[in-house]
Length: 125
Image (cartoon, rainbow, N blue to C red; front, side, top):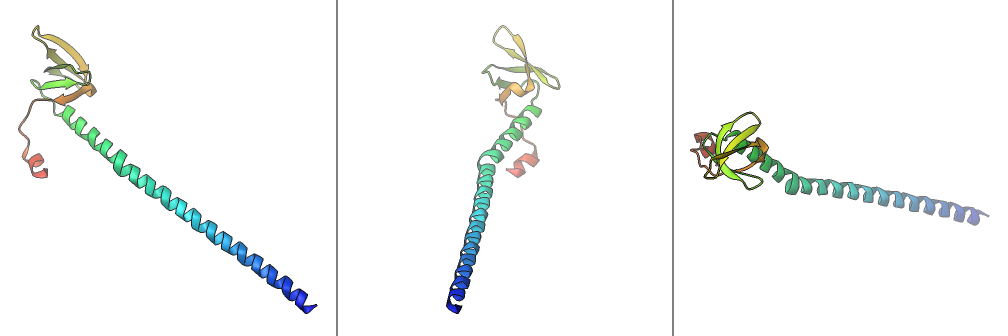
Protein backbone atom coordinates (compact mmCIF):
# COMPACT_ATOMS: atom_id res chain seq x y z
CA UNK A 1 0.00 0.00 0.00
CA UNK A 2 2.85 2.37 0.72
CA UNK A 3 4.17 1.95 -2.79
CA UNK A 4 0.79 2.85 -4.27
CA UNK A 5 0.62 5.97 -2.12
CA UNK A 6 4.20 6.84 -3.05
CA UNK A 7 3.39 6.46 -6.78
CA UNK A 8 0.36 8.76 -6.43
CA UNK A 9 2.47 11.38 -4.63
CA UNK A 10 5.20 11.18 -7.30
CA UNK A 11 2.63 11.58 -10.06
CA UNK A 12 1.13 14.62 -8.33
CA UNK A 13 4.59 16.16 -7.89
CA UNK A 14 5.41 15.54 -11.55
CA UNK A 15 2.14 17.13 -12.65
CA UNK A 16 2.84 20.14 -10.45
CA UNK A 17 6.35 20.41 -11.93
CA UNK A 18 4.96 20.23 -15.48
CA UNK A 19 2.43 22.98 -14.69
CA UNK A 20 5.19 25.15 -13.23
CA UNK A 21 7.36 24.57 -16.31
CA UNK A 22 4.46 25.47 -18.61
CA UNK A 23 3.75 28.62 -16.63
CA UNK A 24 7.44 29.64 -16.77
CA UNK A 25 7.48 28.99 -20.50
CA UNK A 26 4.31 31.01 -20.99
CA UNK A 27 5.71 33.90 -18.95
CA UNK A 28 8.89 33.84 -21.04
CA UNK A 29 6.94 33.96 -24.29
CA UNK A 30 4.83 36.88 -23.04
CA UNK A 31 7.97 38.81 -22.08
CA UNK A 32 9.48 38.05 -25.50
CA UNK A 33 6.30 39.25 -27.23
CA UNK A 34 6.26 42.51 -25.24
CA UNK A 35 9.95 43.08 -25.98
CA UNK A 36 9.38 42.44 -29.71
CA UNK A 37 6.44 44.85 -29.77
CA UNK A 38 8.49 47.54 -28.02
CA UNK A 39 11.34 47.06 -30.48
CA UNK A 40 8.90 47.41 -33.38
CA UNK A 41 7.61 50.72 -31.96
CA UNK A 42 11.18 52.05 -31.63
CA UNK A 43 11.98 51.08 -35.23
CA UNK A 44 8.79 52.78 -36.49
CA UNK A 45 9.69 55.93 -34.57
CA UNK A 46 13.20 56.21 -35.99
CA UNK A 47 12.32 55.29 -39.58
CA UNK A 48 8.90 56.90 -40.03
CA UNK A 49 7.81 59.37 -37.37
CA UNK A 50 11.08 61.20 -36.68
CA UNK A 51 11.95 61.96 -40.35
CA UNK A 52 8.39 63.15 -40.99
CA UNK A 53 8.57 65.55 -38.05
CA UNK A 54 11.91 66.83 -39.33
CA UNK A 55 10.43 67.51 -42.78
CA UNK A 56 7.45 69.31 -41.24
CA UNK A 57 9.78 71.46 -39.14
CA UNK A 58 11.84 72.42 -42.21
CA UNK A 59 8.70 73.24 -44.22
CA UNK A 60 7.37 75.44 -41.40
CA UNK A 61 10.70 77.25 -41.20
CA UNK A 62 10.66 77.79 -45.00
CA UNK A 63 7.16 79.30 -44.83
CA UNK A 64 8.00 81.49 -41.84
CA UNK A 65 11.08 82.90 -43.59
CA UNK A 66 9.28 83.92 -46.80
CA UNK A 67 9.94 87.51 -47.81
CA UNK A 68 8.46 89.79 -50.44
CA UNK A 69 10.40 89.29 -53.68
CA UNK A 70 11.14 85.59 -53.13
CA UNK A 71 10.56 83.24 -56.05
CA UNK A 72 8.39 80.38 -54.79
CA UNK A 73 6.77 77.21 -56.11
CA UNK A 74 3.43 75.94 -54.84
CA UNK A 75 2.51 72.31 -54.29
CA UNK A 76 0.47 72.56 -57.49
CA UNK A 77 3.54 73.55 -59.51
CA UNK A 78 2.75 77.26 -59.93
CA UNK A 79 5.84 79.45 -59.73
CA UNK A 80 5.89 83.14 -59.04
CA UNK A 81 7.26 85.99 -57.00
CA UNK A 82 5.84 86.87 -53.59
CA UNK A 83 4.11 90.27 -53.74
CA UNK A 84 2.29 90.30 -50.41
CA UNK A 85 2.32 88.07 -47.35
CA UNK A 86 -0.33 87.94 -44.65
CA UNK A 87 -0.67 85.69 -41.64
CA UNK A 88 -2.02 82.69 -43.55
CA UNK A 89 -1.98 83.65 -47.25
CA UNK A 90 0.56 84.73 -49.85
CA UNK A 91 -0.07 86.68 -53.05
CA UNK A 92 2.25 85.62 -55.86
CA UNK A 93 2.74 87.26 -59.23
CA UNK A 94 3.03 84.82 -62.12
CA UNK A 95 3.69 85.04 -65.84
CA UNK A 96 4.54 87.90 -68.13
CA UNK A 97 1.12 89.51 -67.83
CA UNK A 98 1.72 90.02 -64.11
CA UNK A 99 -1.37 88.12 -62.98
CA UNK A 100 -1.62 87.67 -59.24
CA UNK A 101 -2.78 84.57 -57.36
CA UNK A 102 -3.56 84.33 -53.67
CA UNK A 103 -2.63 80.97 -52.13
CA UNK A 104 -2.59 79.59 -48.62
CA UNK A 105 0.77 79.67 -46.90
CA UNK A 106 0.77 75.87 -46.41
CA UNK A 107 0.65 75.47 -50.22
CA UNK A 108 4.17 76.86 -50.68
CA UNK A 109 6.55 73.96 -51.23
CA UNK A 110 9.80 75.57 -52.33
CA UNK A 111 11.63 78.88 -52.08
CA UNK A 112 14.08 79.31 -54.97
CA UNK A 113 15.56 82.57 -53.64
CA UNK A 114 18.78 82.20 -51.67
CA UNK A 115 19.11 84.52 -48.69
CA UNK A 116 22.11 85.13 -46.52
CA UNK A 117 21.89 82.77 -43.57
CA UNK A 118 22.21 84.16 -40.07
CA UNK A 119 25.46 83.21 -38.35
CA UNK A 120 23.53 80.99 -35.91
CA UNK A 121 22.34 78.68 -38.72
CA UNK A 122 25.80 78.58 -40.30
CA UNK A 123 27.36 77.54 -37.00
CA UNK A 124 24.73 74.78 -36.57
CA UNK A 125 25.63 73.27 -39.93
